[in-house]
Length: 149
Length: 424
Image 1: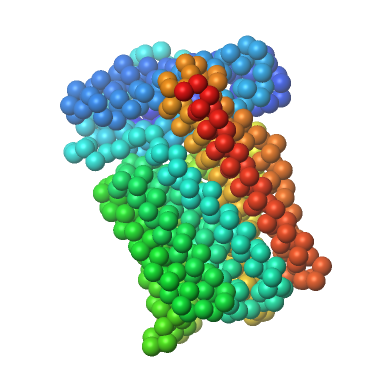
Image 2: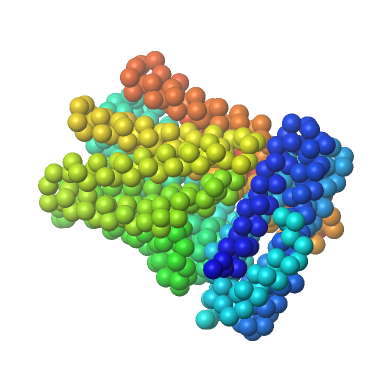
């Protein structure tokens, strides 16, 4: 059976793909392609955050009783990434290549260390604690508009 | 399950890793000055006092200091655990290790037993403190992920290398204790292949897919590689001690190291992040050097017989220093950004005034330093063949590459404080 970890980790990889193609187009000054790739990337990230904040984290907090633990830190990091993505959009609008590449590199490292903490620590905890509702949760995540939709 | 021990904090205080990163190149520059003073002879005799001093300036002063800084930085992220009071403990460990390495290596260079003894008085407690705190943190972590397992085995290897090193140093500095020179090879095995290589492999599992946006390392590879390597090192050291034939185990270890290099190169070449940066080149140079190192080592074993310094050199400079240099270019700018971002509410209301990673150290500047590093590597390698022509030039370029690296790090710190103090 597909675990919650599997579904969420696959989402991370998908965001990585969009990230890489947006960065490549920006580096080539191909702003039309860059715009659409960056939008796909940002949408994918925002959907992923939404799945976590509205479905996964509340369920985990309910089951584990921890409302101010790891999920709080992850929410805080989502906010930081949202701010970075807002700045990315501004750089896209002004076609500022240096600014975009600087921000995207920063976002990449931030995002990857965030993903690592989720994939290695938080998701396995959620898999363990929410095992009974696993199927229901993965369906709920898929029902919400997804990045692949 | 009890989650109270769990730490998903972002990162330790800026200076916790940075004090190690910023000081380590200075030891490597001292090593190069010593190489220049001693002359080309250091390239061919591993037992010269200067060679021993240079080896420890690089292995303890540069590599271990960098890896200790990286451990303070990465442990909370990779294994989800904090080192006990890391802000203050890193400071105390740093002071002891810096003083200890300085005195210990001066003592080795001048064969001054009193200086070696004073150095050990600082070095032993410093390293012991680091080992105890990281062992405890990793024991608490309970993480079964590949990187945490690799880090545990790397720290275990450091324990073994450390204990053997202390025995050897006591034998060198105290006349009443025997110098057990046959332990030297076992000490080198655990320091280079255990502490350094297993740690770099554990970090590579995370940072190559992260920074280069590649596929993951194969699951089985991640799960078993460090364990197999550790067992091989146990077998190798027993065979060295018993003076049995090493042919079979050396072949297995060589193949394992080649496997790691080729798997990693393959991942990097197939990376999704197509925009190449200095970090990519540093990894490729490091992994290529690791392959070269295995080839030279085996050639030396079966045909030549006097290439041990060259093997060590390609390992230290070609592999380890390249990889560390490349990672610093990601870690230091990110730490500056991250810590400024943490202070954002104090300094300004907008994210736009915080320099991005590329504004901390630009891509172009990183590439310049990489080219100096690569030229120095190629020239110093050539100097093993034609010492008179390339020895001095290679060494000077190597020093220049480290000096430039350090200038970039100082500039990053200066930028951090200039932004921080702008609107307090």
